[in-house]
Image (tube, rainbow, N blue to C red; front, side, top):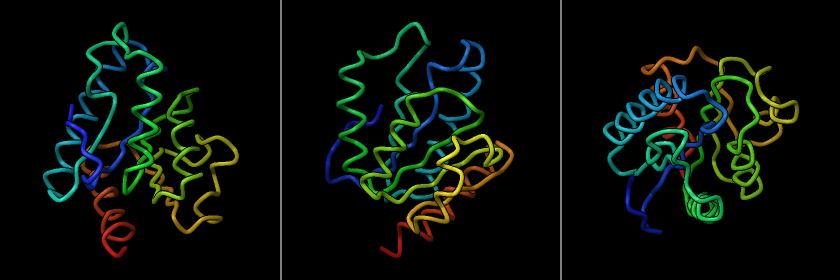
Length: 158
C-alpha cells in the first residue's frame, strides 16, 4: 500500500471489495493491481490509492472505523475519483462515490453498462460537468486507456 502524504497528487481508485466471492475477488484484485501499476507508469506525477490492494483475502478486511476515516480523508484530498463498477452490487464504493460527488471531485465511473449503475447515477455525467461515465467491456488495456484519457481531459487542464 502506498504511504499517504496530503501533498501527493493522488487518484482514488474505488471498487467493490466485500461484495465479491473469494475466487472472484482474487481475479478482480489481480486486474486492479495491474491497473494501478499501469496508471502510475503512464502518469508518474500521480499516485494511485486503492484499498483493495492491501487486502489479501476477504477474511482479512480492515477495521471499519479505520477504513471509513482513511478512505474519506483520502477522498477529501484526492485530485480525482475513479469508480470501477464491474457489475451491479451493493457496495461501500457507492458511498465513496456519493462523498466524492458531494465534494465535487473530478469523477470517472467505469462500468459495462450505465444500466448497471443505481438509477440516480446513470445520468450524472449529463447533470454535472465534473463527472464522466464510460460504459465499456472490462478489459485491462481499455480501462487503462479510459483512465489516461480522463486524466488528460479532466485533471491536467485544471
